Length: 150
Image (cartoon, rainbow, N blue to C red; front, side):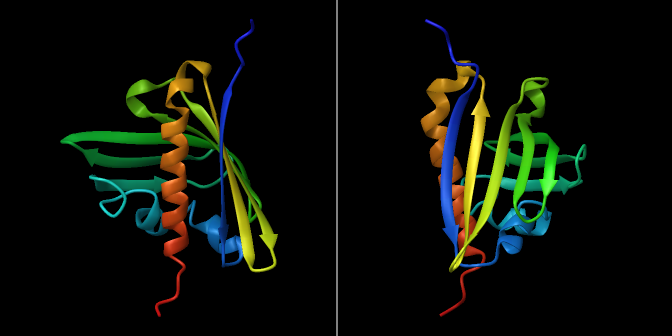
């Protein structure tokens, strides 16, 4: 039996804001710090977030967890605002091993829908449910940065 060439984790979320607002939240460190990383999501401290959001540009998201610095790194493969973003995703300590993340944002009547596909090496298939849950938590946190105070 052939092993699949990649394992795909797919997570979707709807937002009540324009696609451009959701798209920019993936590229601006000041927005990333409100939903992707930080103590409001998990037991971690943001050390620094850097993006060079252009095709061929890179990012580095350094957090401290349990006394250890973890540097999430990647390269932007596609930057097509406000529809599509694709990038590699990895941990600096594990390079050159990376995975691929594709973000597709489509307008809907009340805002937009985001579909995230994380493509992993098959050896990480046991982690797929955990990766899916983690992205789902982050995408829900992204929605909260645009909620209006009541």
